[in-house]
Image (cartoon, rainbow, N blue to C red; front, side):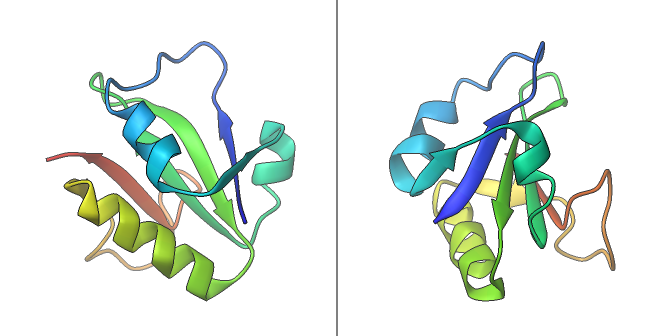
Length: 94
């Protein structure tokens, strides 16, 4: 199961309900999510990362990425090597 947390003080995106409906997520504290091997950030309409999703296994990470792409969200790091803002993938609305 993927672990997730909302970032305090940053409003969720309007499409957040779709994420929580389509992904099997365990809500935990931010420090627990940040310890996961792979991190996915999700940006709100203002461009701020408001949600982190952590995956222990690469196949869980890949499945989450595919689900987010199915929601027509775009991974802005898809063509970038390494991490950015501590995340391996960062999704936003197209």
